[in-house]
Image (cartoon, rainbow, N blue to C red; front, side, top):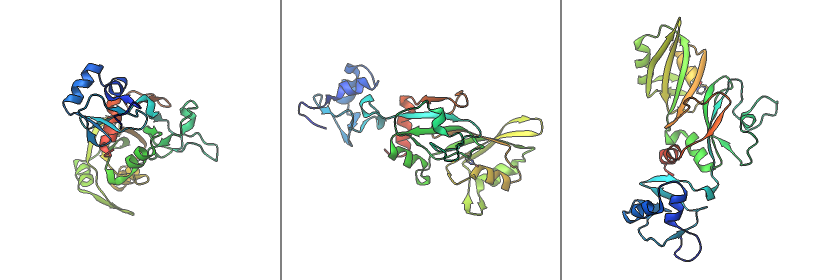
Length: 246
Ligand code: URA
């Protein structure tokens, strides 16, 4: 940040990022609700570099157009590998991103057979933290399994079970639907280990027929169609930065 003539006035940067009118942003600054590079700012004249400053309102990160940050949600179709390109020529994530120029990182991986929400960003530190188990970002999956599912299964999964590579427990487990002999269950956990949901459910006697990731943190897949992507909105982006302490 700087008081000199370089940079752009903070209230203008905030307004440009969609926080509110310039006047409303001035009120936020005066109230001590705006932070730049870790410091609360109350002075109106402050100029910042909108491409580089880390700006938060009420502790929530805002991203400016000048920073050139991209945050996308993709509904990965079944059969697509979670890499940006595949040496064996299998369909990969880049095939669904319409030739974007930014260097995008995918946040973690889904099995080729798993569908659903995968986040992509050119903010390498964000991608790294979101995929790292120590930040405990929750992921929600819906799995189609053979029924019936006894109530004891949920208890067993919440209490924790031990797999070949160590113990794991789910944060929540519930039956969401029944289709004939098949049951749809929702599993929430903050694990990133390979095939974790398939292994867990197989271990408790319910091998997965179909697996869809529906949420990463507070970002929801919603009605995004398979193979389609969308930019995350301001609240979703701020939620992800908050979840990993950035
Ligand atoms: N758990 C799995 O088993 N597969 C995935 O793709 C993600 C989580």
